[in-house]
Image (cartoon, rainbow, N blue to C red; front, side):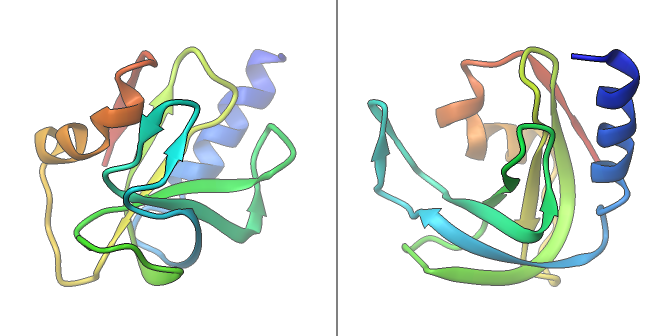
Length: 119
C-alpha cells in the first residue's frame, strides 16, 4: 500500500476525534469471531469508507451490554502499524477515558496488532 495514501487516511480518521458518529454494531459484546470473544461492542460507521474498501470500524466503549447501534463521540483512534485500517473509539459524550483505560478495554482484539492510541 502507498504510504502517502495510508498517511492521508490516518489524518482523515484522526479528524473525526471529537465528532459525533452513529455506529452500527455487527459484533456485540459476547460475539465470537475467529475465536475472539468481544468484550466491547464493535461495528462500523456507514458514512466513512476505510482503506480496506469497507465502512470504518469502531469500538463502542462504556456500554456494558450488547447493543444494535450507538450514537456517540469519537474520543480516540487506534492507529494500527501492521494493518491497513485504523479503528475509532466511540463513547457517550459525557464519558472520559485515559489511553490506558482504552487500551485495556480493546485489548481483547488489539493485543494481536502493533499500534498506538491517538487522542
